[in-house]
Length: 179
Ligand code: 2AM
Figure: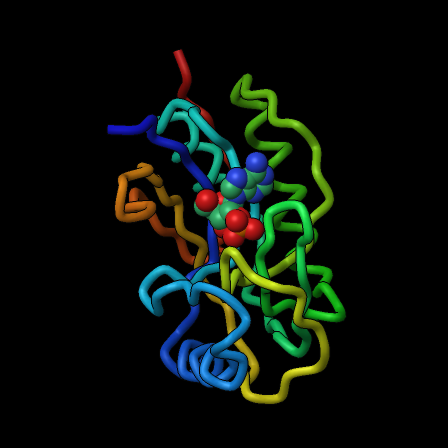
């Protein structure tokens, strides 16, 4: 069994999944499609971190953010990892704020995470050839929650488990009860 890695993600609702599946179908020769139940958008990748601390930081960051809307309107390609993804030409400000809040709360909890620019994307194909361009199949995504997910690498591919989920923007005072 591989190590458990953690990440904070947005999980698409059914209409968005339908749209993403339609894009996968239209470009089915692009590479190996990601199964529908694994389609997601990573807000921040933590790696091998303490689950309890990640949950405390996630709860605090989610409370600061608010619901947001995302337009997945473009296809992009990461040459290094050879993935084709659906992304947003315009990254909404509340998503940038959520990303920043996660960094801030993790730091408050004593976790150092390498800074990386947020490129909001849902990976659609792996081992893929480059495909880029506009897409129109995906309806507006109304995001009102964020999920803490753990991933274990197995021979058949990654196994994801939902560890915690929070509604965005409940307000309140962020806390971190780390000993
Ligand atoms: P990807 O879809 O672009 O591969 C689980 O692996 C999730 O975490 C995926 O969404 C994956 O992005 C992302 N991920 C994996 N390793 C990462 C890393 N080193 N930095 C940022 N995101 C990563």
